[in-house]
Each structure stands twice: as structure tokens, then as C-alpha cells.
Length: 41
Image (cartoon, rainbow, N blue to C red; front, side):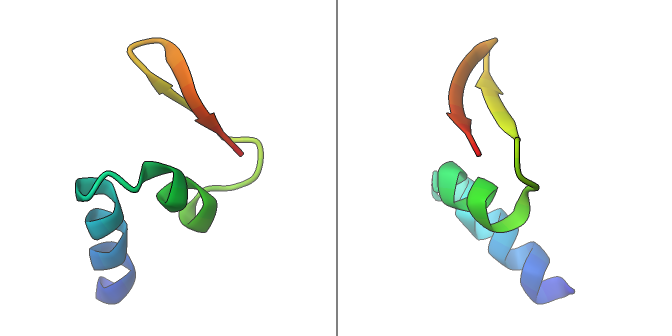
């Protein structure tokens, strides 16, 4: 479990948010930043 959490944190802190979304989030996720859509899956 720690390995998954560390991978999630690494993707997030290195700015690989779209990769993080594809790897760890369910389908039909909408990513927002200050109310603006910047990614979806």
C-alpha cells in the first residue's frame, strides 16, 4: 500500500496530474483548477 501512496504523491508533486488521473481515478473524472477544467477521463 505504501508503494501506491508514494507513487501517487510522486506523480502529483512532479506535475504529472493527467497521468495520475489515468492511473488512479475512475472513469468519468473531471479535473478542475480554480473552477476551470484542465483534464478529464
